[in-house]
Length: 527
Image: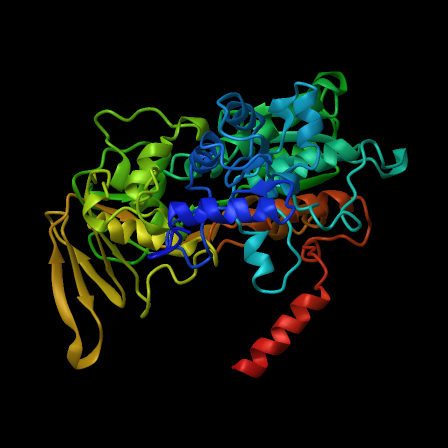
C-alpha cells in the first residue's frame, strides 16, 4: 500500500489466495495507493525497483497462478533481468507502449536501440488524463493522435519535396528533422554543439532524469539511419549565421552544386537564460544553470538558487547529490541504485510493517552534498507550477533532505563584494532583510527565446522572411517544455510543404476533445 497502517504482509497473502479462489488466473502486483507519499511510477523511480514484492510473493508459493511484476519497467533489458532472476512470471507495461507501440516487435528483432523509450515523465499521459485531456506521450506525440498525425515513410509527392535547413538539434529540432526526413523531404541539420540533444543533455544529468539519455539515443539512431538513406545531412560543430542562410537560400552553393539550395529554414535554437537585474551580478561567484549543468562549473558548499521553477528545482536536486570532487560520470537509467532509492523513501523490502513502510527512525537519507537556499519572487508554495503528478515528488525530495530552505516572495537587492546575496522577504510592515553568506549564487530565473536568425530574416525585409520558422523554445520560452517542443516540431514537419503554412501561422496543436471541454466546464462551475 505504501500508506501508514496499510495492509500487513499476511493480509496481502490472504488477498492473493482469495483472488485465486475466486477464479482469478493472473495476479498483477500493483504498488501503492494514489495517496501514497512515495513515488512509484515517476521517472525518479529506478527501473524495476518494486519487483522485489512480486518475488517475495512468488517465493512463498502461496498461490499457483502466474504473478505479474509492474511499475517502472520500460526496457527489454529490465524485463529480461526480472524474468531471469525469477522475480515474476510475467511483466506488465503500459506507458512504454505509448512511447513506442512497436517495443515488443523491436525487442524480438534485436532492435533495442531503435526503441523510443518511455521516460516516465507523466507530462502527456497521466498529467493529461487528470485534467480531461486526451492522453499522449512527450516522446511520441502520435500516441492517441494517430489519425491526425500520420508519419508514413516517403509519403510526400516529388513536387511537394523541399530542401529544408534546420538550425538546432534540441527536442524540437530532433523531432522536426526525424519526421520531415522520414516522409521524404531533404533535410540539412546544423548545430554548433558536437552532439544532438540540446537541453536534454543537461536534463539527463539531473538525479532522477537519467532516462533522458534514452531519448537522445533514440533520435541519434534514427537520424543516422536517415543520413545513410541520403535523406539527411548532419553538420555538428557548425554555427550558422544569417548571411550563410541567405547564401544557401539564393544559390546552389559553390563546388559544382554540392550544396542543396535551402527552400525553407527551421530555427530550433532553443533559449538563453534570462538574466535578472540585480546589482553585483558580475561577481565571479554568480553562475547560470548552464554553467553548472553543461559546463560543469565547480560549486561551493553553500548555494543560493534564484528561481524556483522546474529548472531551479532540477539544479537544487543536482547540487544536493553531485560531488564535484568525485562525480564526473553521468549515470544511465540502468545504473541507478534501487536499494538506495527504497531506503531514502522509507520502503521496507521485508514487509515487516503495515503498508510496507519503515519507521521514521529507520529511514536512511543519502547525505546531502550542499546547503541550499531556493527562492522565488512570487508568493505561495514553491514549485506550484511543476507537473501535476510529479511536482510533489520534487518538493518532497528537497524538503526531506533537510538541506534546502525554500523562501517565497523574495526581492533580490544586491550581491556584495564578497559574493553574498542581500534579499528582502515579504512586503510592507512584515518585510525583513537578510544576507545569504553563500559560496555561489546560481541563476535559474527563466529563459528568453533565442531567435536571432528569425529576427534577422524579418528585419531584412527580403524573400527569406517568409521562409524562416521558429519552433520549440525559440518560438516560445517559458519553462523548458519538451512536450510542446516535440509536438510542435512533429506537426510542423507534416505541414511545412503546404503553401498556407507561413511564419506566424505555423503552430499546430491537438484538437480539443469532448472530455477536456467537459472538464473545463465543470471547473468553471466549481470555481
